[in-house]
Length: 112
Image (cartoon, rainbow, N blue to C red; front, side, top):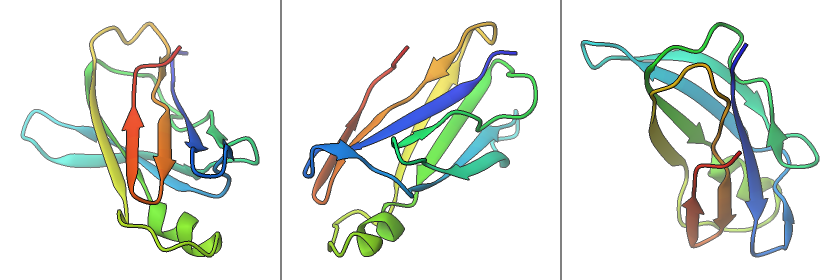
């Protein structure tokens, strides 16, 4: 089964961001978002098992609860959460969406 995974790296600390709560949602034809999975990044900052059903061609959204992560790290961050929306056009392939994070910025890209 194809999947969606993520990896969060804390660029201000130079290491993986463990303990980041993540939610995966899918947008339907009417524009409504439905939760499809959730979890928390492991000690390596990874979340490999977000989707427990077949992947469909659709728009998806990952929401990272960065406020919880920063609070646990004793840091005051600017962004309480980060949302990344993306489109799955080929549900037969793996989709990896990493997040590079620091208290005052973030970036992302299509990983492998």
